[in-house]
Image (tube, rainbow, N blue to C red; front, side, top):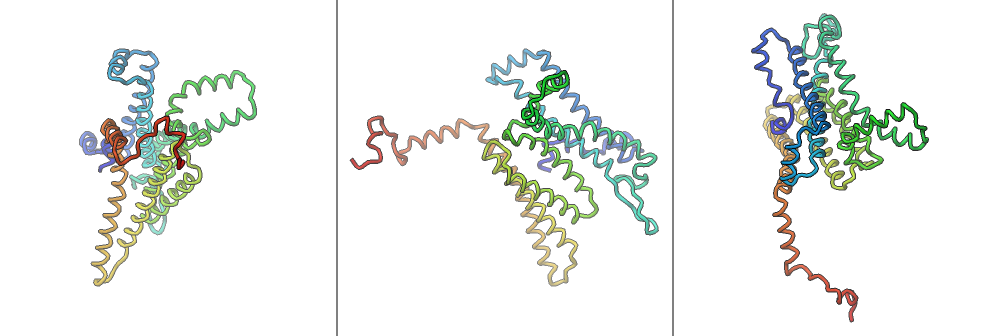
Length: 347
C-alpha cells in the first residue's frame, strides 16, 4: 500500500471498468490496460519531439530563473524513471495474459489462461488476447534489456577489432548517438566495464515476475529466492556501480529482499502446518512475530528514502551543523603555515 502510491498500481482499480462494461472479462480489462501503458510511451515520444523542436523556451527560461540549468538532463532523467514504470506495468500485463495454468478434468490436465479457466490456452478465443501480448513482449519487453546489455559489449568488440567504416556502421553510429542521452541515463551510474548491468536490471524483472504466477507459494518463494541469491552473488562479485555507497546500498537491499522472501517461506510453512492444541498458541505468536519482522524489513528502504529526501530538501541545515563542528573547541585547530615544518616533531 505504501509503495503502490509511487508506481502505476494506483490505476489498478477495475471497479469503474466493470461498471462501464458489465460483460467484460478479466482478459478484456487486461487488454484495456495496455491503452494507459501505451499512453505513457506516447507521452515520452511527444516530450522528446518537444525537446527537439525547442518549443518550450518559456519553461526553460523560468527554470533558469529558479536556478535550474540542466533542464534537458532533468527531463531525460524524469522520462527514464517514467519509462521504467511503464515498462514494468506493461510486463505485468503481458505475463498475466500469457502465463498458463491448468484445470484437472477426469484426471487429465487441461491448460487454460491464468485468469480465465473457460478458454483453452493459445487456442480459439485466447488468441485474440495472446497475439497483442506476444507483440508487446517482442516489440516492447525484449528490446530494452537486449539493447542495454549488448550495446556496451558491441562497442568494446568493435573497438578491439577496428571495424572499417561503411554505410551500416555509420548508420548504427548515428542511431546510437541519438539514443545516447537515454543510454547514459540508464548506464551512467555504472562503471565502464559494467554498463551492461543496466540491461540486467530489466532482465531481472522479466525473470522474477513469472514467479508470482507459479502454482503454490512454496514454489513461488523458492524460485524468487533462487533468483535473488544469484543476483546478490553477481553484484557482490562485480560491484557494478561507480559509487562505493551505491554498491553497499545495492547489496543491502538485495539482502533485505532475500530475508523477506525467506521469512515469507517460514510463515507459509507455519500456515500449512497443523499444530496440536498445545502448540497452536506458540505458532500464532511466532507467526505474528514473523509478520512484524517482515513489515520492519519492508519499511527499512522507506526510512532510508525519507532520510535521503530530508538531506536533499534541507542541505543548508546539514552544512551549517558541519561548519559548527569544524569551529568547535573540541576539535584540533588548523595548523598555521609556520607550524607545518615542526608538526610531528618534539622540537
